[in-house]
Amino acid sequence: MAKKINVAVVGASGMVGGELLRLLESRRFPVNEFYPFNSGRRPAAVAFKGRKYACLRPTLAALKKADLVFFVSTDEVSAKFAPRLAAAGVWCIDDSSYFRMAPGVPLVIPEVNGGELSSSGKLIAGPNCTITGAAVALACIHRKFRIKELRLATYQAVSGAGRAAMEQLEKELKLYFKTGSVPELPGPFPRPIAFNLFPQVGGFDAEGRSGEENKAAAELKKIWRSPGVKISVNAVRVPVLRGHSLGIWAKTAKPWTLKALAAELERTPGLEFFPDPYKYPSPLRHGNKTLKVYAGRLRKADTAPNEFQLWVVSDNLYKGAALNSMQIAERLLRETL
Ligand SMILES: NC(=O)c1ccc[n+]([C@@H]2O[C@H](COP(=O)([O-])OP(=O)(O)OC[C@H]3O[C@@H](n4cnc5c(N)ncnc54)[C@H](OP(=O)(O)O)[C@@H]3O)[C@@H](O)[C@H]2O)c1
Image (cartoon, rainbow, N blue to C red; front, side, top):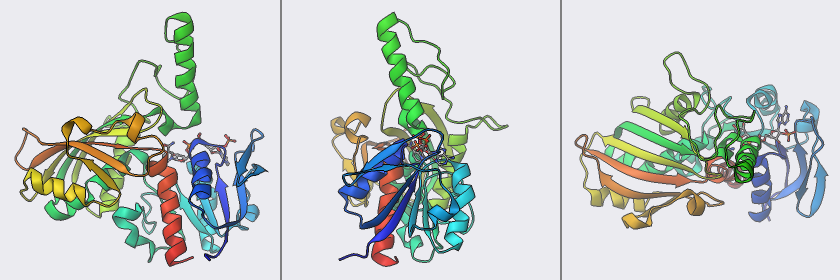
């Protein structure tokens, strides 16, 4: 029987935290003691393995009781606790963006670069939920044909911005059906999101790129260890509850045939590829509690030689966050813990 370990979840009352708890249960992760934490700003209780637990505000002393801590709360909380815990020998899997680009912290998608876990320290970062789909879907094609330019158009679900964002869309929709117009309510988004979309995910830098666009490009280069790939992203928030989609244009250094690209997609770990153009994935079916990344509509692009297009969908809360972290933990358990 696998060794049982003490597990803490910081952000257990959030969107990703909730999914993580269900995955710890359903995948039978061998949890001994379980410690859930939230901000402490409001009372919250979570159910885990048939028991109800009150969430507490995290402290270093309380977190040190765990062998493994999942950070699914905020950048500030991860920054405050994770390095000190890792230095004390506690495994930390961080879904915030704080350490993703830190030198020496591996940024891991197990199917793509899981080998980085074995040589890593105790602090491991999981990537941005948007880029996970591209990193997984294109991994084998990149290895074989070397992608040198990548253009990504993202269609990002509201749950990517957390529970408050999901609630915002639901509130706006309810008011629309009651009053006939979409209200301008204060909330996490720069514009109403019901029946709307906007090209802003995060703030803008001096050159007009959004935080999400910069993160996606930088993180993909790190995961693939390919700093030379040129990446251009247009990140858009759409009124989908769950499941991020990507329109991809990829230009390779080496020539290919569509058959050869399809063969790479068929054998890509963690990916399900739909060769029939009418069977493309969509968020409602393929981005909702789904365990893989899904791709379809492979075709040649007319814009340049060696350029192709692909459509990709993945569950931002699962493969984009909670499931990816679970898979990291499972691999650590098998190989290291
Ligand atoms: N949503 C996604 O698709 C996604 C994908 C990849 C990565 N992530 C990352 O995962 C993290 C969680 O995202 P989410 O979507 O689950 O957000 P969320 O639904 O807003 O949940 C945030 C969680 O963090 C807790 N929290 C906030 N401040 C805290 C503090 N000072 N100390 C301890 N806990 C605190 C909240 O507790 P209260 O209930 O007390 O407020 C809540 O449990 C973020 O870092 C996000 O960037 C999210």
